[in-house]
Length: 160
Image (cartoon, rainbow, N blue to C red; front, side, top):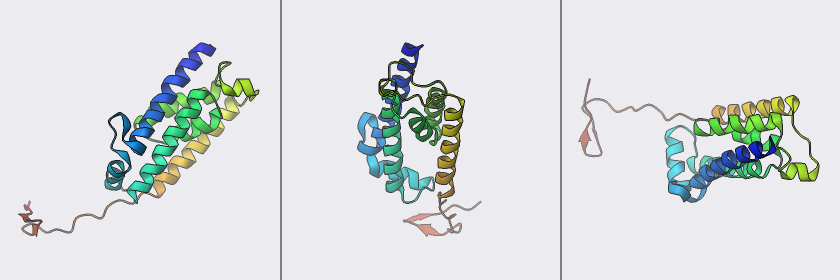
């Protein structure tokens, strides 16, 4: 069981960390802070660059903690507070919060036994609060006020 948990932690944790470094540094085909920030602003997460930084740090940090098996409930909560792609990784991280990181982890070496239903549910509650806070701070762009037939950037807007 410990080897299975180690493999799960390494694959999920390092995949999540790589996803975060795409946002932070543009590694692994990512767009870095500027590109990711622009995309996040289109989704209503303003200011985009700061949101990209927070998301990148959260994904990288949570991923590395999970891979190491260190502060597992915290890592799971941060991983799960993401959405879309990171939701899958977060659910996998949450399962590790319920089971514990296994004998082949830094938590085990340090004698930390933070696992079980209470820790898993705690990680879930913290994750849902974190995700809710992020969504509550989201600012959707204002709808376009351009009228049909109006010229914008040299082009005429088509009517219905």
